[in-house]
Image (cartoon, rainbow, N blue to C red; front, side):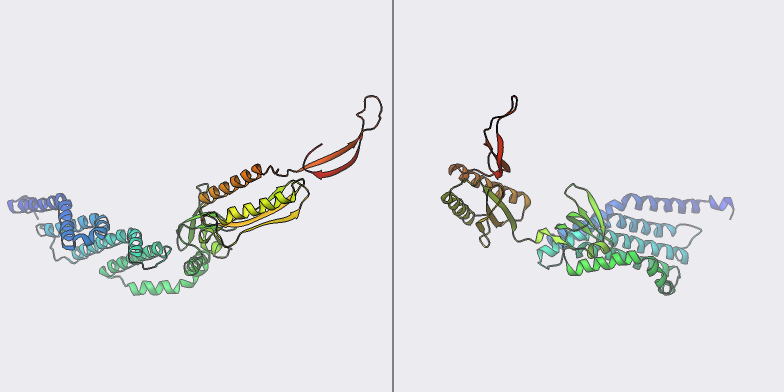
Length: 372
């Protein structure tokens, strides 16, 4: 084709129309996308408000890509060296459409965890919070696999042969990835047995903290020092797990040691008053309360206290414990009862000694509560 033909009026007009179509679709892609979603919102009404936000965020860019693909298709009609019916062009454009749709669905599945959580809570579906992010990840993998296979088939590749090849190499893959498979099966065990869920406070030989995320390979735990620890599921599934968040009540137990010179009547008063205090406290669980004169110790008389708070919240638990301790301290102070401290009582007898020596000798050294 000669230059005279290329620069002829007809060809120049076609090129101008082609560029105009491309520029028009490029600049109008955002407005077209916006109005399409506005029409969708009007059709769906307020019922689609929650889902619409997720849909708009996920398909905004892919929709613009589809509009550009449509613009390229229309523009090719004015390109003198390429027909719209060209097989390669059709395959490329179809692949582009499939890619854009897959991209939008991938984005939607990535943000679906929040949407699924809302649906789960709203309709009381009782789906464990662990399953929601795993379902989202699985959905993304499926979308990628389906999009890849459709695009491959569009260009004439036999996907069935590729899948069969994966089956032949499955054994070698399993041997090479045995640790990864162990972690995956560990994740399945955690999901099915449900020893914990996201947000629970757990204690294991490996880590203690709050569960932040659970995947097929590992579980992420946020420690109380705000460090993020990633524990392989194979390790976690084989360890004893204490789930503190599943407690119905929290235990308080300690010994109150009184001096040996405390009269029996006052010991009885302390035991009965403390027991009365615990049984009438609104935040103490009434099911199990023990306050008893327990045993004689080296430093004094021990009173045993064993009870539970209704709350399992750590901060509130500490406030209740502090309140009980202050009440007991006030009771001891009002009854003029002393708390025994580790000490020794030394009894000495005066004797005559050499000049410069301290007179006296130790007759007895016994445990006690004060020094004389």
